[in-house]
Image 1 (cartoon, rainbow, N blue to C red):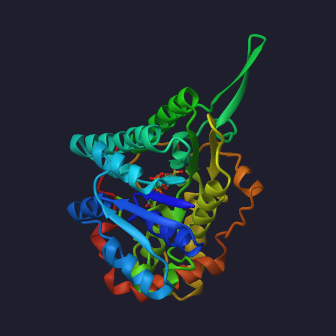
Image 2: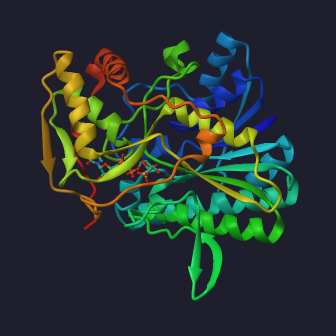
Length: 382
Ligand code: USQ
């Protein structure tokens, strides 16, 4: 396949690019370094320094012989998007090119506006670039489980059948996101669904939970190929943050009661899921939706796990509840269906004690690079 990856410098974009290239696909990645710029502006740089996208692609080519074409540019600019899609003529477009931080989107007006404009503009532009230059291509779009919020009923995979006053119909499952960032993904879904049903585009929307990990087959080949591993309050996801806190000797930052439950997955499984989605494209006029997670945990369960494994390795891990900077339910029902990707062949890498220990070992090697003032929450929803 000719694969075009939008947002190819990110935590998921770069490992995805290597994964598709290693599998023999023709890969082009585009990125404007928005995440790196925000990280610098907010003192939220990743734990391990990562070379530029072009440098990483050159290193990957040296080691594996596989080429990843890189384009540095802003996909919110419609002209650039049109040119990229026209010139690469992709079979598959993987759309990661969004501002992915919930806290950043809630920081204030400039950050909210940047998130809103970037995320919606890129989605709108890619839709139109497909309509004009690649109507037969399949888009794999990264959504988020956060689109659904935490409803008091089972979360179906994207769609729900409703019986109402003796009639029935199939609808998008209700969405009720908890941050502006997550809400931009709800808006993306609606936009995609409109263009899919009206113009026959082929789209798969992946509702992904928080990802953890820093190891993939290709990332492990050289330190220069590792993903951007964040532990700050802006870009760090829960598990990655707790691992770094355990190593730094900072009590694990449980927000509020810690009953907040989410569906987690290993970075390796993101790669599997995206490959499975790309290899099993939606049909013309179909919006396929998968819930992309492998197991659910509450914040307290993640904290207990990291504490137990950390202590068995001689770390003295403490857990401490701090006031919740977010507006979210701290006790709730949570039961998302997630069978679609498994039916396509997903083989989960679960969060076993061994997996936690391996991640802790990697972070212990980089202990000197941890900057403690990036750890506590600096953004409040209130
Ligand atoms: N939390 C803590 N302590 C912390 C950090 C987070 O208790 O130190 C809690 C949060 O309040 C939340 C849960 O842990 O209840 C998950 O937080 P998170 O920061 O791991 O995840 P979130 O902000 O929702 O966003 C992350 C990614 C986002 C992706 C999303 C999937 O940054 O791009 O879309 O995970 S999901 O959470 O399913 O919406």
